[in-house]
Length: 501
Image 1: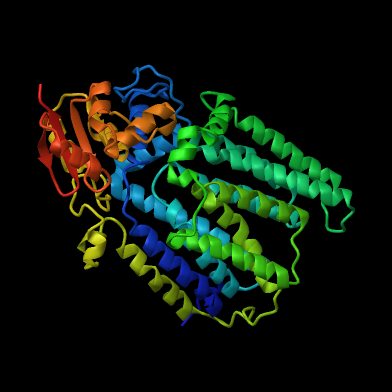
Image 2 (image 1 turned 60 degrees about the vertical axis):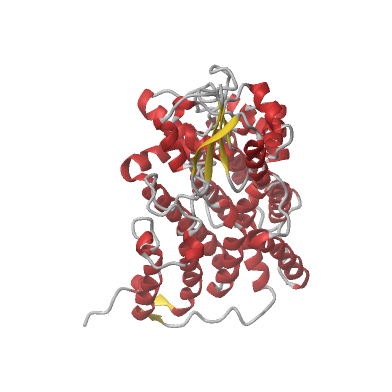
């Protein structure tokens, strides 16, 4: 029998990260999709596909003028989400997210193996990096930033290590043309270019033997300049940079939205983040490996970024875990073992490990005998699609479509699904956080918490309420006690209330 080519016969050591990656794929595939940052982006993608123009105004909130300006910076990411949805519904968008996550973290694992020389060490840091990003993996335009970020990081790292000609860096401006239109995280590409430029320039000035030449650093500067110019290739030009900077300092986003705030040591993901900091500190203390000036800048900059907001932890993981792998290798532990003989049985086993990932894809998962505690989080058999989170008011919005009208107060996440499924109704508020003034958000919170709820509803002219039973219990009690309000619809998750004329 003819032997398989060497490329198809995997070493036993490679199974370590593959086991971790397959487990990560199962977890990501089973994540219920919350409504907040999905449905309203999908609606913008639909408008783009239908009109060929990027919207520039409010459009959906009845509490603001329809022409109130709003910046849709992730228009290409929204359009791509809608194209996936049109081709294969929610199922295909969820599957695409899983594929992008697996590709991104596999690239991280290969970078860790290259630095450490060990697939076992790569598996260890892959597990830690994957767990700390559990809060960053829902379907939204950010998923289109993962691979561009890795392209910038890997190409720049290979250049700094002398493995890659500076000419390869001219690919980065082309990547930036896509990235700047897909998601606001494009600014991190410029940050990476700046860090490598400063770090490698200092190494050159210090006369390090392995530093890049001035000619090569000129190529890096050229790539950086062209990438900066590439950010202007978008419908709003330089305004995209102003938008991103403004969003990162927007008071409602920074003060009221959890993912924009510093991670606290609660939950699996945040605990893993803090554990990674402890491990990194201990390993760097005892390892023979010492980061270069560029690597120290990378760690410091992205640690500060992750510390400032939970939504940025994923970028810290992608940067720090390969460096942690190299530091672990410097401890001289027995994790750096020979990879073993290549064997086709290892290849078969690697394929079998991904069978559960395939079975967990949205087209098949609802037929699986998963625990009831899991199905309690998912609208099983929903018309909206598979794996839709119970925080999505599918049945309540269907009722509103049959009984339209009124000035509606709604839970914030419900506003996202309303924009998608029944935009004619208009929303009181929705996850486009920076659209609404800070005091509007404070009034929204007061109403939901039962603080002057009736007076504030009267002040805004609200005569109908769509609320989340779990998140707005106090508002339920207020409306139950108010004689002028009556409940007209209820299910296990949502209620609709109507004010008497």
